[in-house]
Length: 152
View 1 (tube, rainbow, N blue to C red):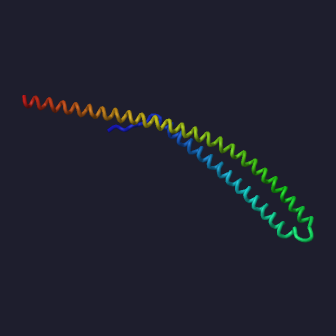
View 2: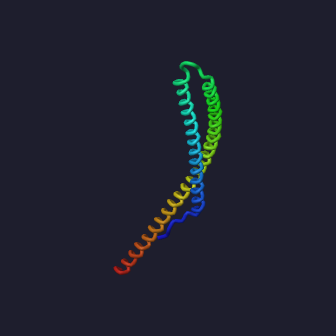
View 3: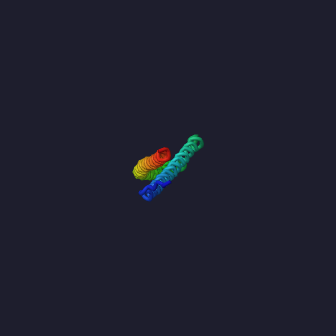
């Protein structure tokens, strides 16, 4: 029996590889976003711990201006770092959005080719069945003619 061959199979494989590459790009950007979120979370935990230590030990009794000044400098530095991380996160989110849009387009392109392949295969199979039925009809007709000759 004949085998179905899709004339655009090479293009479909290229589109599949392109889709995989775009999935990989999105995943890499998401990992970068998670890393930045982790940095921001760690910075927040450090600031909370620092505030708690300041409350617990340095606000009772005599006020140590140096400790409060150090806390203020730390707090200012942590805020600057947080703003920098937030900017990076915004930039990475924009890249993620763009990469996802490209991924959606790649998926659409692959699905279009798969749908075309499926439609062509269905038409090919219908044609194969028609040819097979035609061949069976010819065999049946030949057998009928032989029987008539043998009987007649």
